[in-house]
Image (cartoon, rainbow, N blue to C red; front, side, top):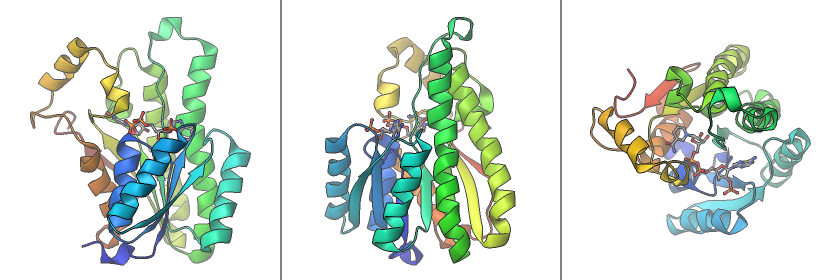
Amino acid sequence: MCQALKDKVALVTGGSRGIGRAVCQELASCGCEVYVNFSSRVEAAQETVDICASVGGRAQVLGFNVADSAAVDAAVETIRQKSGRLDILVNNAGITVDGLMIRMKDEDWARVLQTNLSGAMYCARAAARLMVKARAGRIINISSIVGQMGNAGQASYCASKAGLIGLTKSMARELAGRGILVNAVAPGFIETDMTSALDEKVKAEHFKSIPLGRYGSAQDIARVVTFLAGEGAQYITGQVVGVNGGMYM
Ligand code: NAP
């Protein structure tokens, strides 16, 4: 099914853990050469590389902070020098600093927006410069169900994820003529480090609102990302694909 992804070059931000790791594994198992980005946990990123190798794929770590535009440009230049091109970008790196909006500190607001939204734009901008020359490419932004619905206690995170949807649609329109497809995936409640920190009562509340009756797995998201990167998605751009067990319709 993923034959067309063989030998494509992919960059996955935040590939060291959770959803990003599963995306790296899935792309590597289809034959992509994967750059596994991380910000601080190099051992975790190396573990992802080992997992990619265990499924017969090729991967290497590429640490940089997505919120630092100069570091992003340098990293994409490294990919250009080593691999000659970049076919797939998955903007997955993300953080959350939860708390009520009324008490939100300026620096917490700024950090979440800078990482989740500006970081994705920096990576897309740098990647698109290479993709435009190739007149082909796929950019997949990992948004969130709460970017569509809102969530009390997560104003900065929701704003960043809603912003990613606007960014996705604008980039899709700007880049369509160059053969570059841009889509967003909006996961629901996925079991990763990010959600394991939540209070059990909060988790139980979320659980009740999932018609499919289970939390999502990182692989549920990775499969959809891989579809959007592949041959079957040739006529899909500017879309937000909800992968949420029916939690938001
Ligand atoms: P996670 O387990 O907390 O992993 C976050 C990843 O992002 C890590 O690889 C981390 O690197 C990386 N990262 C954080 N800040 C970074 C930065 N400034 N530069 C580069 N990398 C950075 O998160 P997850 O649950 O897998 O979520 C992945 C994405 O899906 C996020 O964008 C999240 O908002 C979104 N999402 C998650 C859920 C969910 O239920 N889990 C739902 C909807 C959307 P280190 O390992 O080096 O720290």
